Image 1 (cartoon, rainbow, N blue to C red):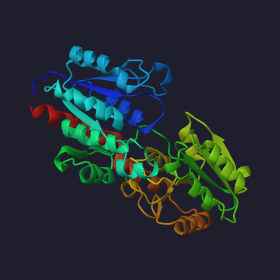
Image 2: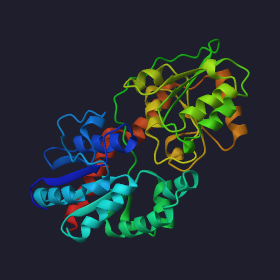
Image 3: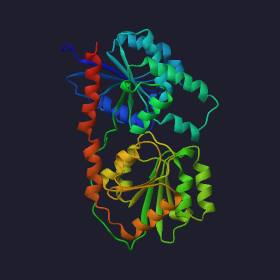
Image 4: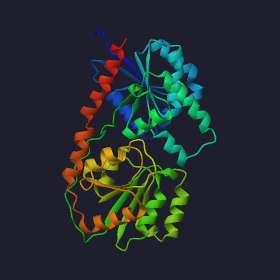
Length: 362
């Protein structure tokens, strides 16, 4: 490789609130500026953006759908002549992969955001078989697939025909410098639970509510997020006589404030890509109780140190009772586990090494 900067185009459908959007924009603006020339391409609209991208150049194509951005993307690729194009979210990964056929000198990377085969079991789609065939074809065309967790890596290899050597495991980085909360072990106050995620069926709010409905001690539960399941969730809370114990927030820029004042983060998901919010909860010192599911939980949670993984409803309820009575997690230990594993410097270095290796492979 010569001394010229490596030019990379990051592509996203939008900069609306979401894990892929936050991580991709964070990585793009955090790369070493002496070695990388990065730009972020958003196929959607600027008006829907919620993330601060700093001095990163962002180009909005202002298209209502990814499929409508093809000509604009092609012109951009010809003009920019990038060494690397990296996309995230499966439909954009599939779409952008086909540009590799006409741009053989550019390296294409797909950053997978879900354990796809498991996600489809909980969000079935009539078009899935066609989509899966397209994903299989597309992932043969890209040069590398970034997987956020071991579960995701195993899924693309076992179910999408991707050779292991074409995958690379890079966990998500800690994207915020949240402050560690004060150590408090007051069992006389009502315990405070929190869940921050999209309100969709596979996120498992129902089974969290089922567990909470069995408790015979006072608690307060904060739900943050929006989505198609909102009406069902709040009707179900009412049915279970829990409405008075629940606070609802649609969206907030003060995630760390809500996490810091909570005693325990609850996750009910049936499948995750790599849940960034669990890392953020641990960073501030708030431990996690999660139902066991594919998506890197065992890479984040150290049993009894920064949380617990429950294998059944009964086990989840048992942990709720144990944690309420003891509240003995040490906030510095909860935080240090994730800081050591997912610190910005460590993860950004892994991205930079991937990009260097790909360009050098020419």
